[in-house]
Image (cartoon, rainbow, N blue to C red; front, top):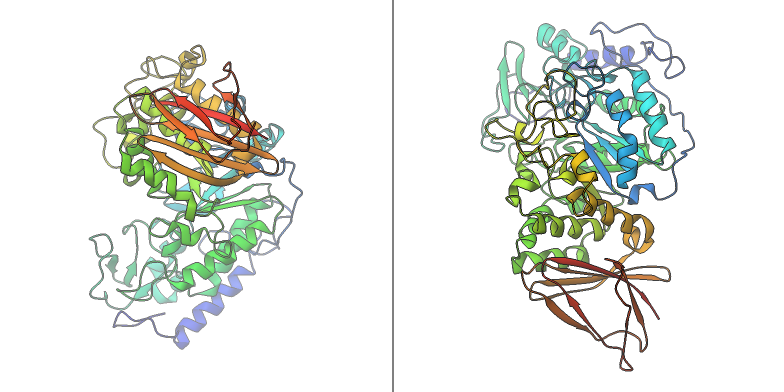
Length: 551
Protein backbone atom coordinates (compact mmCIF):
# COMPACT_ATOMS: atom_id res chain seq x y z
CA UNK A 1 0.00 0.00 0.00
CA UNK A 2 1.76 3.10 -1.26
CA UNK A 3 1.10 6.82 -1.09
CA UNK A 4 3.04 10.04 -1.12
CA UNK A 5 1.12 11.96 1.52
CA UNK A 6 1.46 9.83 4.64
CA UNK A 7 -2.06 8.42 4.20
CA UNK A 8 -2.58 4.79 3.25
CA UNK A 9 -4.54 4.20 0.02
CA UNK A 10 -5.83 1.01 -1.60
CA UNK A 11 -3.32 -1.24 -3.33
CA UNK A 12 -2.50 -0.51 -6.96
CA UNK A 13 -2.57 -3.10 -9.73
CA UNK A 14 1.14 -3.73 -9.19
CA UNK A 15 0.57 -4.18 -5.46
CA UNK A 16 -2.27 -6.60 -6.21
CA UNK A 17 0.05 -8.65 -8.42
CA UNK A 18 2.60 -8.75 -5.60
CA UNK A 19 -0.08 -9.86 -3.15
CA UNK A 20 -1.14 -12.67 -5.49
CA UNK A 21 2.50 -13.75 -5.88
CA UNK A 22 2.97 -13.78 -2.09
CA UNK A 23 -0.27 -15.73 -1.64
CA UNK A 24 0.95 -18.35 -4.09
CA UNK A 25 4.19 -18.60 -2.14
CA UNK A 26 2.18 -19.15 1.03
CA UNK A 27 0.78 -22.29 -0.59
CA UNK A 28 4.10 -23.51 -1.73
CA UNK A 29 6.65 -24.43 0.92
CA UNK A 30 7.46 -27.70 2.64
CA UNK A 31 7.95 -27.34 6.38
CA UNK A 32 11.07 -29.08 7.67
CA UNK A 33 9.10 -30.91 10.41
CA UNK A 34 7.05 -33.80 8.92
CA UNK A 35 3.32 -33.55 9.41
CA UNK A 36 3.32 -29.91 10.50
CA UNK A 37 2.26 -28.28 7.20
CA UNK A 38 1.26 -28.85 3.61
CA UNK A 39 3.90 -29.70 1.00
CA UNK A 40 5.39 -26.97 -1.19
CA UNK A 41 8.72 -25.74 -2.57
CA UNK A 42 10.92 -23.23 -0.72
CA UNK A 43 10.30 -19.52 -1.21
CA UNK A 44 12.68 -17.29 -3.05
CA UNK A 45 13.41 -15.48 0.19
CA UNK A 46 14.69 -18.70 1.76
CA UNK A 47 12.10 -18.67 4.55
CA UNK A 48 9.22 -20.98 5.40
CA UNK A 49 5.87 -19.29 4.84
CA UNK A 50 3.79 -22.45 4.46
CA UNK A 51 0.31 -22.77 5.91
CA UNK A 52 0.36 -24.71 9.17
CA UNK A 53 -2.92 -26.45 10.00
CA UNK A 54 -4.23 -26.66 13.54
CA UNK A 55 -3.34 -29.91 15.34
CA UNK A 56 -4.77 -29.70 18.83
CA UNK A 57 -3.29 -31.80 21.58
CA UNK A 58 -4.69 -32.61 25.00
CA UNK A 59 -2.79 -30.78 27.72
CA UNK A 60 -1.23 -32.88 30.48
CA UNK A 61 -0.97 -29.88 32.81
CA UNK A 62 -3.24 -29.62 35.84
CA UNK A 63 -6.34 -27.45 35.44
CA UNK A 64 -5.68 -23.86 36.44
CA UNK A 65 -1.91 -24.13 36.06
CA UNK A 66 -1.86 -20.62 34.60
CA UNK A 67 -3.01 -19.15 37.93
CA UNK A 68 0.31 -20.09 39.50
CA UNK A 69 3.47 -18.01 39.39
CA UNK A 70 5.56 -17.76 36.22
CA UNK A 71 9.30 -17.30 35.92
CA UNK A 72 10.44 -14.98 33.14
CA UNK A 73 13.59 -16.61 31.77
CA UNK A 74 16.23 -15.02 29.53
CA UNK A 75 17.61 -18.30 28.17
CA UNK A 76 20.92 -16.72 27.14
CA UNK A 77 21.54 -15.82 30.78
CA UNK A 78 20.05 -18.79 32.65
CA UNK A 79 22.28 -21.87 32.41
CA UNK A 80 24.97 -22.84 29.90
CA UNK A 81 25.17 -26.59 29.23
CA UNK A 82 28.17 -26.75 26.88
CA UNK A 83 30.72 -24.24 28.20
CA UNK A 84 30.43 -21.67 25.41
CA UNK A 85 29.40 -18.94 27.85
CA UNK A 86 25.85 -18.66 26.52
CA UNK A 87 22.78 -20.14 28.20
CA UNK A 88 20.76 -22.65 26.22
CA UNK A 89 17.64 -24.81 26.28
CA UNK A 90 19.46 -27.84 27.65
CA UNK A 91 20.79 -25.72 30.49
CA UNK A 92 17.29 -24.53 31.34
CA UNK A 93 16.01 -28.10 31.22
CA UNK A 94 18.62 -29.09 33.81
CA UNK A 95 17.26 -26.46 36.20
CA UNK A 96 13.60 -27.46 36.01
CA UNK A 97 13.79 -29.23 39.38
CA UNK A 98 14.95 -25.95 40.95
CA UNK A 99 11.94 -24.14 39.47
CA UNK A 100 9.56 -26.89 40.58
CA UNK A 101 10.95 -26.83 44.11
CA UNK A 102 10.53 -23.05 44.22
CA UNK A 103 6.85 -23.45 43.34
CA UNK A 104 6.87 -22.15 39.76
CA UNK A 105 3.92 -23.27 37.61
CA UNK A 106 4.83 -21.57 34.33
CA UNK A 107 7.87 -20.40 32.39
CA UNK A 108 7.90 -17.43 30.06
CA UNK A 109 10.75 -17.77 27.59
CA UNK A 110 12.04 -14.48 26.26
CA UNK A 111 12.55 -14.79 22.47
CA UNK A 112 14.25 -18.06 21.53
CA UNK A 113 13.76 -17.85 17.76
CA UNK A 114 16.54 -17.09 15.28
CA UNK A 115 17.46 -13.42 15.48
CA UNK A 116 19.87 -10.76 14.25
CA UNK A 117 20.73 -9.09 17.55
CA UNK A 118 22.51 -12.03 19.17
CA UNK A 119 21.29 -10.99 22.60
CA UNK A 120 17.69 -10.15 23.57
CA UNK A 121 16.20 -11.86 20.53
CA UNK A 122 13.53 -9.31 19.62
CA UNK A 123 14.97 -8.76 16.12
CA UNK A 124 13.63 -11.98 14.58
CA UNK A 125 15.07 -13.51 11.41
CA UNK A 126 12.99 -16.71 11.40
CA UNK A 127 9.75 -17.13 13.34
CA UNK A 128 9.86 -20.93 13.00
CA UNK A 129 13.45 -21.71 13.98
CA UNK A 130 15.36 -21.89 17.26
CA UNK A 131 18.32 -19.54 17.76
CA UNK A 132 21.27 -21.92 17.09
CA UNK A 133 23.04 -20.55 20.19
CA UNK A 134 20.15 -21.96 22.25
CA UNK A 135 19.99 -25.39 20.65
CA UNK A 136 17.65 -27.24 18.32
CA UNK A 137 13.98 -28.00 17.89
CA UNK A 138 14.69 -31.35 19.53
CA UNK A 139 16.07 -29.51 22.57
CA UNK A 140 12.90 -27.42 22.64
CA UNK A 141 10.71 -30.50 22.47
CA UNK A 142 12.65 -32.09 25.32
CA UNK A 143 12.25 -28.94 27.42
CA UNK A 144 8.48 -29.15 26.94
CA UNK A 145 8.40 -32.85 27.83
CA UNK A 146 10.42 -32.37 30.99
CA UNK A 147 8.55 -29.24 32.08
CA UNK A 148 5.18 -30.91 31.57
CA UNK A 149 6.34 -33.94 33.56
CA UNK A 150 6.86 -31.53 36.48
CA UNK A 151 3.51 -29.79 36.05
CA UNK A 152 5.11 -26.66 34.59
CA UNK A 153 3.69 -24.92 31.52
CA UNK A 154 5.87 -23.11 28.98
CA UNK A 155 4.92 -20.01 27.03
CA UNK A 156 7.20 -18.13 24.66
CA UNK A 157 7.63 -14.56 23.52
CA UNK A 158 6.21 -14.00 20.05
CA UNK A 159 7.47 -10.77 18.49
CA UNK A 160 4.61 -10.22 16.06
CA UNK A 161 4.85 -6.49 15.33
CA UNK A 162 8.14 -6.49 13.43
CA UNK A 163 11.05 -8.52 12.12
CA UNK A 164 14.75 -7.86 11.97
CA UNK A 165 15.98 -5.73 9.09
CA UNK A 166 18.06 -8.80 8.20
CA UNK A 167 15.00 -11.04 7.92
CA UNK A 168 15.02 -12.69 4.44
CA UNK A 169 11.58 -11.26 3.70
CA UNK A 170 12.65 -7.70 4.39
CA UNK A 171 16.01 -8.26 2.68
CA UNK A 172 14.07 -9.28 -0.43
CA UNK A 173 11.91 -6.16 -0.22
CA UNK A 174 14.94 -3.95 0.34
CA UNK A 175 16.81 -5.46 -2.60
CA UNK A 176 14.01 -5.84 -5.15
CA UNK A 177 11.65 -3.07 -4.09
CA UNK A 178 8.06 -3.36 -5.36
CA UNK A 179 9.06 -6.36 -7.48
CA UNK A 180 9.57 -8.41 -4.32
CA UNK A 181 6.60 -10.58 -3.27
CA UNK A 182 7.31 -9.45 0.31
CA UNK A 183 7.42 -5.71 -0.32
CA UNK A 184 3.82 -5.26 0.85
CA UNK A 185 4.49 -7.40 3.90
CA UNK A 186 6.06 -4.27 5.39
CA UNK A 187 4.85 -0.66 5.62
CA UNK A 188 6.28 1.49 2.82
CA UNK A 189 5.72 4.98 1.44
CA UNK A 190 7.20 6.50 -1.71
CA UNK A 191 8.33 9.56 0.24
CA UNK A 192 8.95 9.84 3.99
CA UNK A 193 5.71 11.11 5.59
CA UNK A 194 5.91 14.31 7.59
CA UNK A 195 4.82 15.00 11.16
CA UNK A 196 5.55 11.63 12.74
CA UNK A 197 7.04 11.43 16.23
CA UNK A 198 7.14 8.22 18.29
CA UNK A 199 8.88 8.60 21.63
CA UNK A 200 10.85 11.56 20.28
CA UNK A 201 12.01 9.82 17.11
CA UNK A 202 10.96 9.68 13.45
CA UNK A 203 9.81 6.08 12.76
CA UNK A 204 10.43 6.33 9.00
CA UNK A 205 13.69 5.25 7.35
CA UNK A 206 14.48 6.29 3.77
CA UNK A 207 15.99 3.81 1.29
CA UNK A 208 16.27 3.67 -2.52
CA UNK A 209 13.13 1.50 -2.50
CA UNK A 210 11.06 4.01 -0.51
CA UNK A 211 10.64 4.80 3.17
CA UNK A 212 9.73 2.03 5.60
CA UNK A 213 8.09 2.27 9.00
CA UNK A 214 9.75 0.94 12.18
CA UNK A 215 8.23 1.69 15.58
CA UNK A 216 11.24 0.44 17.53
CA UNK A 217 14.03 1.63 15.27
CA UNK A 218 15.37 1.06 11.73
CA UNK A 219 16.80 -2.35 12.67
CA UNK A 220 13.27 -3.74 13.27
CA UNK A 221 10.82 -2.82 10.44
CA UNK A 222 7.10 -3.18 11.17
CA UNK A 223 4.95 -5.72 9.39
CA UNK A 224 2.00 -4.47 7.34
CA UNK A 225 -1.04 -6.02 9.03
CA UNK A 226 -3.33 -4.42 6.46
CA UNK A 227 -2.04 -7.16 4.17
CA UNK A 228 -4.04 -10.34 4.98
CA UNK A 229 -1.08 -12.53 3.98
CA UNK A 230 0.93 -11.14 6.91
CA UNK A 231 -1.65 -12.10 9.50
CA UNK A 232 -2.08 -15.51 7.88
CA UNK A 233 1.67 -16.11 8.06
CA UNK A 234 1.83 -15.24 11.75
CA UNK A 235 -1.21 -17.35 12.54
CA UNK A 236 0.51 -20.31 10.94
CA UNK A 237 3.71 -19.55 12.84
CA UNK A 238 1.79 -19.53 16.12
CA UNK A 239 0.29 -22.90 15.23
CA UNK A 240 3.75 -24.21 14.35
CA UNK A 241 4.80 -23.98 18.01
CA UNK A 242 1.40 -24.83 19.50
CA UNK A 243 1.38 -28.04 17.47
CA UNK A 244 4.63 -29.01 19.17
CA UNK A 245 2.98 -28.69 22.58
CA UNK A 246 3.76 -25.08 23.55
CA UNK A 247 1.40 -23.87 26.29
CA UNK A 248 0.83 -20.33 25.08
CA UNK A 249 2.39 -16.98 24.29
CA UNK A 250 3.41 -13.60 25.54
CA UNK A 251 2.45 -11.38 22.59
CA UNK A 252 4.88 -8.50 22.24
CA UNK A 253 3.88 -4.88 21.55
CA UNK A 254 0.39 -5.66 20.24
CA UNK A 255 -0.94 -2.06 20.39
CA UNK A 256 1.50 -1.22 17.58
CA UNK A 257 0.27 -3.71 14.97
CA UNK A 258 -1.54 -1.08 12.90
CA UNK A 259 -0.85 2.64 12.48
CA UNK A 260 -3.34 4.83 10.63
CA UNK A 261 -1.66 8.25 10.68
CA UNK A 262 0.90 10.37 12.49
CA UNK A 263 -1.82 11.14 15.03
CA UNK A 264 -3.47 7.74 15.21
CA UNK A 265 -0.55 5.35 15.54
CA UNK A 266 -0.95 3.76 18.97
CA UNK A 267 -3.62 1.29 20.11
CA UNK A 268 -5.82 1.47 17.03
CA UNK A 269 -9.10 -0.52 16.81
CA UNK A 270 -7.52 -2.75 14.18
CA UNK A 271 -4.74 -3.72 16.60
CA UNK A 272 -7.29 -4.74 19.22
CA UNK A 273 -9.26 -6.76 16.68
CA UNK A 274 -6.17 -8.62 15.48
CA UNK A 275 -5.07 -9.29 19.06
CA UNK A 276 -8.47 -10.81 19.78
CA UNK A 277 -8.17 -13.04 16.73
CA UNK A 278 -4.75 -14.23 17.88
CA UNK A 279 -6.07 -15.00 21.36
CA UNK A 280 -8.95 -16.98 19.86
CA UNK A 281 -6.52 -19.02 17.78
CA UNK A 282 -4.24 -19.78 20.73
CA UNK A 283 -6.92 -20.60 23.28
CA UNK A 284 -8.65 -22.96 20.85
CA UNK A 285 -5.89 -25.33 21.95
CA UNK A 286 -6.73 -26.88 25.35
CA UNK A 287 -5.41 -25.12 28.46
CA UNK A 288 -3.32 -22.54 26.59
CA UNK A 289 -2.50 -19.16 28.11
CA UNK A 290 -2.02 -15.75 26.48
CA UNK A 291 -0.63 -12.57 28.01
CA UNK A 292 0.00 -9.32 26.16
CA UNK A 293 2.37 -6.40 26.45
CA UNK A 294 0.29 -3.23 26.18
CA UNK A 295 2.05 -0.55 28.18
CA UNK A 296 -0.32 2.40 27.61
CA UNK A 297 -3.62 0.66 28.36
CA UNK A 298 -2.98 -2.75 29.92
CA UNK A 299 -6.41 -3.14 31.49
CA UNK A 300 -8.06 -2.52 28.13
CA UNK A 301 -6.08 -5.33 26.54
CA UNK A 302 -6.88 -7.67 29.44
CA UNK A 303 -10.53 -7.63 28.34
CA UNK A 304 -11.75 -11.17 27.58
CA UNK A 305 -12.53 -10.33 23.96
CA UNK A 306 -9.06 -8.89 23.30
CA UNK A 307 -6.10 -10.61 24.97
CA UNK A 308 -7.62 -11.85 28.22
CA UNK A 309 -4.50 -10.94 30.22
CA UNK A 310 -1.96 -8.13 30.08
CA UNK A 311 0.97 -6.97 32.16
CA UNK A 312 -0.08 -4.53 34.87
CA UNK A 313 2.26 -1.70 33.94
CA UNK A 314 2.11 1.05 36.55
CA UNK A 315 1.30 -1.28 39.44
CA UNK A 316 4.95 -2.35 39.72
CA UNK A 317 6.09 1.17 40.58
CA UNK A 318 3.42 1.55 43.24
CA UNK A 319 4.46 -1.79 44.77
CA UNK A 320 8.07 -0.62 45.03
CA UNK A 321 7.04 2.70 46.58
CA UNK A 322 4.66 0.93 48.95
CA UNK A 323 7.51 -1.32 50.07
CA UNK A 324 9.36 1.88 51.05
CA UNK A 325 6.41 2.81 53.24
CA UNK A 326 4.89 5.56 51.07
CA UNK A 327 1.23 5.86 52.08
CA UNK A 328 -0.11 7.07 48.72
CA UNK A 329 1.45 4.06 46.98
CA UNK A 330 0.12 1.66 49.64
CA UNK A 331 -3.39 2.94 48.94
CA UNK A 332 -2.86 2.56 45.18
CA UNK A 333 -1.77 -1.07 45.63
CA UNK A 334 -4.79 -1.79 47.85
CA UNK A 335 -7.17 -0.18 45.33
CA UNK A 336 -5.75 -1.69 42.13
CA UNK A 337 -7.79 -4.86 41.94
CA UNK A 338 -11.02 -3.17 42.95
CA UNK A 339 -11.27 -2.13 39.29
CA UNK A 340 -8.60 -4.11 37.38
CA UNK A 341 -9.42 -7.56 35.96
CA UNK A 342 -8.05 -10.38 38.08
CA UNK A 343 -6.46 -11.77 34.93
CA UNK A 344 -3.78 -9.05 34.99
CA UNK A 345 -0.17 -10.24 34.94
CA UNK A 346 1.68 -8.70 37.87
CA UNK A 347 5.41 -8.11 38.36
CA UNK A 348 7.89 -5.83 40.11
CA UNK A 349 10.64 -5.80 37.45
CA UNK A 350 11.36 -7.32 34.06
CA UNK A 351 13.84 -7.25 31.17
CA UNK A 352 13.05 -3.66 30.12
CA UNK A 353 14.72 -0.73 31.88
CA UNK A 354 11.63 1.46 31.33
CA UNK A 355 9.89 -0.77 33.90
CA UNK A 356 12.64 -0.05 36.41
CA UNK A 357 15.97 -1.40 37.58
CA UNK A 358 16.25 -4.82 39.14
CA UNK A 359 14.29 -4.88 42.39
CA UNK A 360 17.50 -5.13 44.44
CA UNK A 361 18.72 -1.84 42.99
CA UNK A 362 15.36 -0.07 43.28
CA UNK A 363 15.26 -0.90 47.00
CA UNK A 364 19.00 -0.36 47.51
CA UNK A 365 19.41 -3.83 48.94
CA UNK A 366 16.88 -3.39 51.76
CA UNK A 367 15.89 -7.02 52.42
CA UNK A 368 12.86 -6.20 54.57
CA UNK A 369 11.39 -3.94 51.88
CA UNK A 370 12.27 -6.53 49.25
CA UNK A 371 10.13 -9.16 51.00
CA UNK A 372 7.23 -6.72 51.35
CA UNK A 373 7.31 -5.99 47.61
CA UNK A 374 7.34 -9.70 46.83
CA UNK A 375 4.43 -10.47 49.16
CA UNK A 376 2.41 -7.61 47.68
CA UNK A 377 2.17 -9.13 44.22
CA UNK A 378 2.50 -12.83 45.04
CA UNK A 379 -0.52 -12.75 47.38
CA UNK A 380 -2.78 -10.34 45.49
CA UNK A 381 -4.92 -11.36 42.49
CA UNK A 382 -3.40 -11.66 39.04
CA UNK A 383 -0.84 -14.02 37.59
CA UNK A 384 2.57 -13.12 39.04
CA UNK A 385 5.65 -13.09 36.80
CA UNK A 386 8.98 -13.31 38.65
CA UNK A 387 12.00 -12.08 36.70
CA UNK A 388 14.79 -14.66 36.82
CA UNK A 389 17.22 -13.96 39.67
CA UNK A 390 14.71 -11.75 41.48
CA UNK A 391 14.05 -14.57 43.95
CA UNK A 392 17.69 -14.51 45.10
CA UNK A 393 18.18 -10.73 45.09
CA UNK A 394 20.28 -10.40 41.94
CA UNK A 395 21.60 -6.89 41.45
CA UNK A 396 22.00 -5.23 38.09
CA UNK A 397 25.38 -4.78 36.45
CA UNK A 398 26.78 -1.27 36.66
CA UNK A 399 28.16 0.65 33.70
CA UNK A 400 26.39 -1.16 30.87
CA UNK A 401 24.09 0.58 28.35
CA UNK A 402 20.36 0.23 27.86
CA UNK A 403 18.72 -2.91 29.20
CA UNK A 404 21.96 -4.86 29.57
CA UNK A 405 22.32 -4.22 33.34
CA UNK A 406 19.10 -6.21 33.83
CA UNK A 407 20.22 -9.26 31.87
CA UNK A 408 23.20 -10.72 33.74
CA UNK A 409 23.89 -14.44 33.96
CA UNK A 410 21.94 -16.28 36.66
CA UNK A 411 23.99 -16.86 39.81
CA UNK A 412 23.91 -20.46 40.95
CA UNK A 413 27.04 -20.39 43.12
CA UNK A 414 29.37 -17.85 44.76
CA UNK A 415 31.97 -18.10 41.98
CA UNK A 416 32.78 -14.44 41.24
CA UNK A 417 33.70 -15.07 37.60
CA UNK A 418 31.18 -17.67 36.46
CA UNK A 419 28.55 -17.86 39.20
CA UNK A 420 27.86 -21.50 38.37
CA UNK A 421 26.34 -20.31 35.10
CA UNK A 422 29.02 -21.75 32.80
CA UNK A 423 32.34 -23.59 32.79
CA UNK A 424 33.57 -21.12 30.19
CA UNK A 425 33.62 -17.34 30.01
CA UNK A 426 30.16 -15.78 30.57
CA UNK A 427 28.85 -13.69 27.68
CA UNK A 428 28.30 -10.91 30.23
CA UNK A 429 29.72 -10.32 33.73
CA UNK A 430 27.86 -11.77 36.70
CA UNK A 431 26.09 -9.33 39.02
CA UNK A 432 28.15 -7.57 41.70
CA UNK A 433 26.49 -9.15 44.78
CA UNK A 434 27.05 -12.75 43.68
CA UNK A 435 29.10 -13.80 46.73
CA UNK A 436 26.07 -13.84 49.04
CA UNK A 437 23.10 -13.64 46.73
CA UNK A 438 23.28 -16.90 44.79
CA UNK A 439 21.13 -20.02 44.78
CA UNK A 440 23.51 -22.29 46.70
CA UNK A 441 23.98 -19.84 49.56
CA UNK A 442 20.31 -18.99 49.85
CA UNK A 443 19.11 -22.57 49.78
CA UNK A 444 21.13 -23.07 52.96
CA UNK A 445 19.61 -20.03 54.73
CA UNK A 446 16.02 -20.34 56.02
CA UNK A 447 15.85 -16.53 56.34
CA UNK A 448 16.99 -15.84 52.78
CA UNK A 449 15.05 -14.07 50.08
CA UNK A 450 14.79 -17.38 48.23
CA UNK A 451 13.22 -19.03 51.27
CA UNK A 452 10.72 -16.18 51.53
CA UNK A 453 9.73 -16.47 47.86
CA UNK A 454 9.28 -20.20 48.32
CA UNK A 455 7.05 -19.57 51.35
CA UNK A 456 4.87 -17.11 49.44
CA UNK A 457 4.54 -19.50 46.49
CA UNK A 458 3.71 -22.38 48.82
CA UNK A 459 0.83 -20.31 50.17
CA UNK A 460 -0.36 -19.54 46.65
CA UNK A 461 -0.08 -23.17 45.55
CA UNK A 462 -1.81 -24.68 48.60
CA UNK A 463 -4.56 -22.11 49.20
CA UNK A 464 -6.89 -21.93 46.16
CA UNK A 465 -8.31 -18.65 47.44
CA UNK A 466 -4.89 -17.01 46.95
CA UNK A 467 -4.42 -18.50 43.49
CA UNK A 468 -7.73 -17.48 41.97
CA UNK A 469 -10.08 -16.20 44.66
CA UNK A 470 -12.01 -12.95 44.76
CA UNK A 471 -10.54 -9.72 46.15
CA UNK A 472 -12.57 -8.37 49.03
CA UNK A 473 -12.57 -5.72 51.76
CA UNK A 474 -9.22 -4.06 51.03
CA UNK A 475 -8.23 -1.43 53.57
CA UNK A 476 -5.31 0.79 54.45
CA UNK A 477 -4.71 1.94 57.99
CA UNK A 478 -1.63 4.11 58.18
CA UNK A 479 1.08 1.90 56.63
CA UNK A 480 -0.87 -1.32 57.16
CA UNK A 481 -2.67 -2.89 54.19
CA UNK A 482 -5.15 -5.75 54.40
CA UNK A 483 -7.47 -7.67 52.10
CA UNK A 484 -9.37 -10.94 51.84
CA UNK A 485 -9.38 -13.55 49.09
CA UNK A 486 -12.30 -15.99 48.85
CA UNK A 487 -12.91 -19.05 46.71
CA UNK A 488 -15.76 -21.41 47.50
CA UNK A 489 -15.77 -21.99 51.23
CA UNK A 490 -12.21 -20.77 51.79
CA UNK A 491 -11.36 -17.22 52.84
CA UNK A 492 -7.81 -15.97 53.39
CA UNK A 493 -6.88 -12.75 55.16
CA UNK A 494 -3.62 -11.02 54.20
CA UNK A 495 -2.05 -8.25 56.28
CA UNK A 496 1.12 -6.41 55.18
CA UNK A 497 2.72 -3.83 57.43
CA UNK A 498 4.97 -1.57 55.35
CA UNK A 499 5.87 0.61 58.33
CA UNK A 500 8.91 0.45 60.57
CA UNK A 501 6.69 0.19 63.67
CA UNK A 502 4.26 -2.52 64.68
CA UNK A 503 0.63 -1.93 63.76
CA UNK A 504 -2.67 -2.97 65.31
CA UNK A 505 -6.00 -3.33 63.59
CA UNK A 506 -9.48 -4.37 64.63
CA UNK A 507 -11.62 -6.42 62.28
CA UNK A 508 -15.27 -5.58 62.78
CA UNK A 509 -17.20 -7.54 60.15
CA UNK A 510 -16.51 -11.10 61.26
CA UNK A 511 -19.09 -13.60 62.43
CA UNK A 512 -19.19 -14.10 66.19
CA UNK A 513 -16.82 -16.92 67.08
CA UNK A 514 -15.07 -16.90 63.68
CA UNK A 515 -11.56 -18.33 63.86
CA UNK A 516 -8.49 -16.78 62.24
CA UNK A 517 -5.93 -19.57 61.88
CA UNK A 518 -2.37 -18.35 61.14
CA UNK A 519 -0.80 -19.95 58.06
CA UNK A 520 2.13 -17.53 57.70
CA UNK A 521 4.16 -17.49 59.75
CA UNK A 522 3.05 -20.67 61.47
CA UNK A 523 3.39 -21.50 65.14
CA UNK A 524 1.07 -18.81 66.50
CA UNK A 525 -2.21 -19.30 68.31
CA UNK A 526 -5.51 -18.85 66.45
CA UNK A 527 -7.52 -15.67 67.00
CA UNK A 528 -11.24 -16.03 67.77
CA UNK A 529 -13.70 -13.24 67.06
CA UNK A 530 -15.73 -11.97 70.00
CA UNK A 531 -19.52 -12.07 70.38
CA UNK A 532 -19.84 -8.88 68.32
CA UNK A 533 -17.73 -10.26 65.47
CA UNK A 534 -14.61 -8.28 66.22
CA UNK A 535 -10.98 -9.38 66.48
CA UNK A 536 -7.82 -7.43 67.29
CA UNK A 537 -4.66 -8.30 65.41
CA UNK A 538 -1.08 -7.08 65.76
CA UNK A 539 1.36 -7.02 62.85
CA UNK A 540 5.08 -6.48 63.56
CA UNK A 541 7.04 -3.86 61.64
CA UNK A 542 7.76 -4.64 57.99
CA UNK A 543 6.13 -8.05 58.10
CA UNK A 544 3.44 -10.20 56.52
CA UNK A 545 0.66 -12.10 58.26
CA UNK A 546 -1.67 -14.56 56.52
CA UNK A 547 -4.71 -16.23 58.13
CA UNK A 548 -7.43 -18.57 56.98
CA UNK A 549 -10.87 -17.55 58.19
CA UNK A 550 -13.43 -20.13 59.30
CA UNK A 551 -16.89 -19.50 60.72
